[in-house]
Length: 339
Image (cartoon, rainbow, N blue to C red):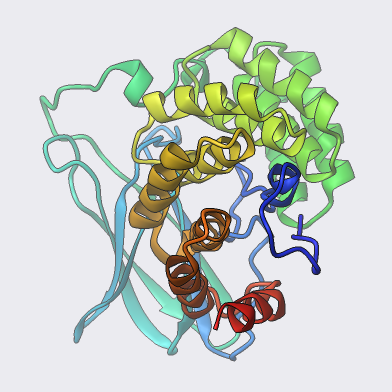
């Protein structure tokens, strides 16, 4: 979704302008913009991967991931709500990927990776719990539905096929496999979630909502479908309902920059500017440049309040943080009108 190129004000239709490309929470590795990562155009290397529990379950809490060489730490990021991370623009060589979760619960995990020019390297790191570590409540950690031991092997195979097809951009094929997975095992929470996310990417919002609600019928405390449902409702312009769902997502995982970002967008849609400002700033604080979209919305928010200086500040910061964003010309025009 893009802002209308001629729109610079804030009116009753502002909510329609606040929609952003959904960073879908699926089992696929995706860039922060929601698109499948591509080779670094600069010719440098890249590494992307996921941090999982030893049994392959998703971690719904952020984990710090550092990329280091013999010279020290080169870069660091936090994983998203499915344990995914990515580093781009890397000089070829041997690196060590270091994952650090809650030190009271998890051992630090490391893995060596070779970076080659123009080619992505993919790694999976397993974060092992310390002996005797206390387990967090289910609402704050892994959903019971995601740990379902009753999923038939055939359903798991279809889920894997759907995930792989989605990584290759074959969305129709991914949907077909995921539908098969849930037909084999209707209580397959992750498959319902990922099917909803793929349908959302195609703009099939009613179908996406239906699948995500089915996932939440299985486990109301599952974070991923809660977040994705909030995104669907934002894209359907049902901002009041979206804000409630995203509040729940935040209660399940309060350090999720995605939940904070979309909650801020929903709150803008119902003109709750004070709290929208708080959520957008929190999204950027938690997610950094990967969630620079929050800066754009903050610029629009301050513009609506008549605070031209603050609006210019956040729009200029957005330009610095998201130099490859698709609406740079529009933002530059906005800033020029504010000068």
